[in-house]
Length: 394
Image 1: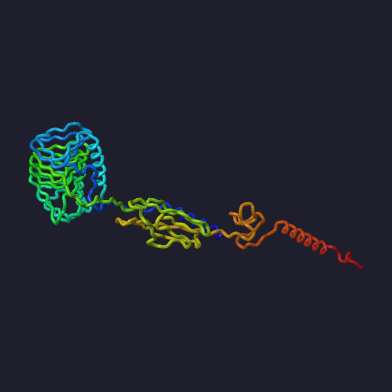
Image 2 (image 1 turned 90 degrees about the horizontal axis):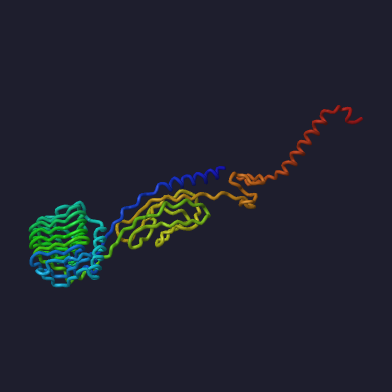
């Protein structure tokens, strides 16, 4: 019975531990190069509803509109490129813009909660805020391969006379502004980078843009502006990587000498590898570093805390604490113990009256015969004692 109680106790503990699943780690999404604009890259201006220009704007790059049909102000605007008005090229470019917008929006910032960037000298990275603005000077300091991505959850405002400059050989090819609603470039602003606005972009009088004005669902409005889409961009588009998050449930309990298998799974790109970085697996079990499968045949009962790590080279790694409980195997006496046999039953005794603790087998028929002999002998002795001595002979 002590052994049966021990088995039941380990099962209860395992069930309680199964309810205590560690919370998943927060994943991070990074990119190791510029945002891939796809077929939207040649466009200086790309819109969904309308493109409107006032005055003699100079546009060095393509102009596109899809699915809207209204492009006005060309001329007097001069376009040193191709105008794609509601054609297949513009439609594909807008689709690629949506993909690029979503990639930029999904990246994990190195600094968040930002507002006015005026006066800053920013090294490469991803920067985010609710409403971003530049009202004075902003410097982007890096190399030709450095990448800056700005995430504005709401609006982007580049103030009148604001100026963005680059140092160290940094390139306008690698500067991106993802805007959750609309962007406005005030009069005379000197702007660098590709604006990817969810709704609209407006450039006021004499604002100059070394980059692109791309509006995913709304309009682009110009007024005597100079726009130059970046050319000669040599840095390959970046690869998006997401750190792992373990998604599998707590490993189940196992039993000594019974095959065990459970797979740890995790999201992330690229596929992570799995290691045990804390504690130790129950003896007899191993983990496959590629598939995350814990398998084998446990040899020793007990409770085994472990820490599983999923890592793919993108920080942070995902570490989750688990406990694997291995129960002992009930003893089966010689001669069986399986269903229908005279071995051990869950209650502790077999059909022939075995004693699970000692293994001694008792035959019920033999017991009955022995009892009959004992009773007969006792009765015989009693009768002999009660007869008079004269009746015994002589």
